[in-house]
Length: 420
Ligand code: GDP
Image (cartoon, rainbow, N blue to C red):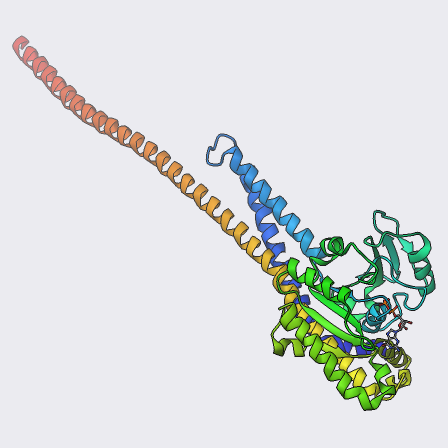
């Protein structure tokens, strides 16, 4: 079945690098939290009269508890984020649906995404959406309803609609990948705001092009701005609608190499975000619509090629899978590095700061103990002396008494003798 196929896929998925790292760092932070809380409780419970820890230090310990809790909170929300850009109708929503193996985002004419849509996994069976600035969970039963909800009121183009989709229905969502669909770069003048609001924490960017035309200035300039704001963003380029090339097989190879060359040149020489070799691994020729159709067929137990639009389905299908694998490797590595490296260095610095403080307290406690021992020792010395003196005195007294008694005895004896 589709579910077991998906499961088999996940086991070897490069996304597991992130999933495992997240679990590990969560466990470590769980231990740090226990240690910090226990220490803080112990320090806080020390009686006032023991003057080893001052108020400031107690407050500092308390602040570590809060810091660790805050990091754990961020950690629980950490995910891998991929954002899709390109002109309207190039197929951004279709690519996302193909990757999710289900028609989640509305696509097609009249369903132009005119705000940002984020799809993320959620526990449970129910899909729902939340609009920006609201807490209300709007239930999503059908794609049509979702499309209507998105079009219903004029949403500002840089606002964000979050779509929560049952994690267990898709392995990518289960493995913590979050997808962001954007309005077409051709319709917006607020590209700067977009980048600031939705892109700075993206681990991977996917530029979805229409392989029937050339890259436009709008698409190029958007990525120029992204690469100015972020150092070396990870960018993949999908030449979508490649199924259309099948109708002109005599030009297919030359069109492909022209596009390939231009895309590589864009990444390497214009944006300077990757080497020639890396860039060659970042450019793909796919058909999102066909891939989705193929996958929907597979989910019903049919062969994928029943979803084919044109000649050459298998190659395009493989290329889409190749893109997914390279994308998974890239996003999980990048997310582990950007997200967890920070947390682990913060964790290390909290642990070493606390250790230093505890070492100091321990040293102070030792000094205090030694002082008390010294005090006790000098007291015992004095007692000993007194005892010794006392002994001397008593011995002397005994001797004296003894001799006195002897003297008295002698005197008495003498007196008695005299009387006799
Ligand atoms: P977006 O505006 O970039 O999100 O584009 P959509 O995903 O909504 O796609 C726009 C239209 O193009 C829809 O009617 C899709 O079915 C169609 N489409 C998307 N990808 C392909 C593809 O690879 N091949 C073909 N033939 N049509 C596609």
